[in-house]
Length: 123
Image (cartoon, rainbow, N blue to C red; front, side, top):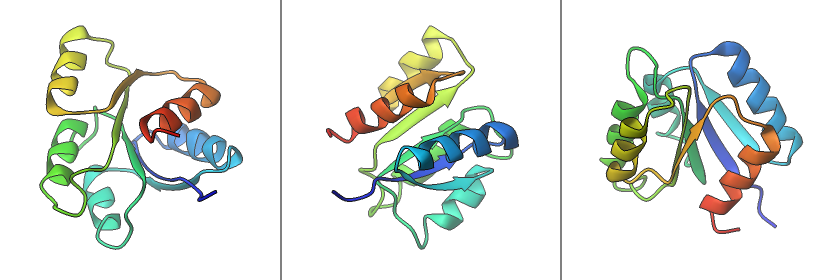
């Protein structure tokens, strides 16, 4: 079976490292990025199977990052997971209206995150 590749975008260094390490232990290939602009540069040379992004980031928030990725023809169909501390029904509804696959509230158990990734990839 092919290794699932994940681009994980979060400006929280500790969380990014912990979830990157945890997903790698679960067998995923994880490319971490500390911001939307860094992730967009990564996407010029690497196309993951799925993208996980935080919403509250600078200088580009998760919504802006999502919209930038969706403008790129080769990337517009990539599944997206918003992983956020924003526990707000309006933000979740807005995310779903944009086409985001999953809206997940932090903190999250690594086993649950792995299941959500596989679910979104129909595995």
